Length: 476
Image (cartoon, rainbow, N blue to C red; front, side, top):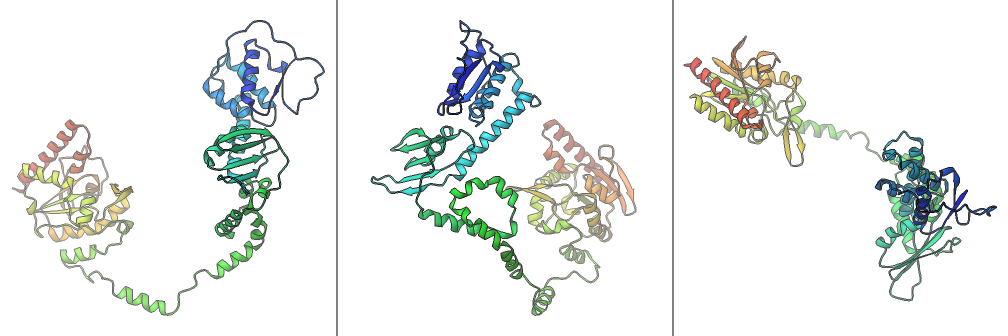
């Protein structure tokens, strides 16, 4: 039997120096006894010597070294034994650590999490008390009881965080001392008699003010702040009293909550609503329809959009061009087809011999639908319900304008005008008959802007222009 006694400091280096020659000679894990100083029982027999020679080379992945540096700090020396078993296994299975179903890997993972959690708790729950100082540097001391042997591994954090003062952290295992920028480790000590600190009042006041009695979750509190640390933390001294008073404080909060509005509020609400603009009682013209559309709440799009965007153009225009919905530019300007897509449409109409001033320009949906992304508003396609809700306004426009031909640009416009949601590829360039007149279907100019392939964009623009030329021929 080989026996290895690990020290309280330099634990990982000691484990590595012992494990490497043992593994080089392929000494089975069952023949190695790992223990810590102070916990070692008296030896009945001498530890077996290693075989002569250096043995075979030992190699491990980097992830194993990182794992071993934490697991070896576990209070139970079984962690050191499991690490050695994994070290042997890795000589034949390089991918062992990636196998999360392997029982050895799972046990090592559990030990690793326990140590990592203890390191975090020490950083979070150590509370320093100030001591008298003779020199220019302030002096502090703290008491902490870790679950595992983490003091040495955690000193780097406190040295960086509190480099400008002298401090000492005492534990049953070790004492970490930082003085004049130099770190030293001393044997563990009993809990010192630390004085009260003026900062404790500040901590307690802060904790009392952030405590919400209506959101008490004792299980979660104990999980994240175990009760064993409470005695070292000034703010936790108030927890029992605050818990006892929580029910009364919640009741007081409920009594202080908002009550029913006073009677005079109804009169104020009536006056406010009376001052709001109202839609025309009857819609008898495009002007009435525009005024009513400005107050439209037929779907939820009105809540986010800046304004409704009604159509514009000659009220007896022979051609009506219907897009999908206002974009970012149209939403701000309150006019259809004034953004980049509108500029593409203007060029295509000019190439086709059509005059925009002679057409009624509008959209199937009157409010801009988008999702915010930082400072940008990204266009979102309207759904079938939103298209159906806005169909009311589009029908009014077609009823009053009575165009000889209507162009549907894009899928939403085609659905609103024909009631069909079929794909556009097979329908583009064709005229479909509807009860309100013929509808020619084509690409929306925004499709040309979205296509990243220049050749595909050029083809879509040519097809849109071709459709507009057909419109020009149909209108004579």
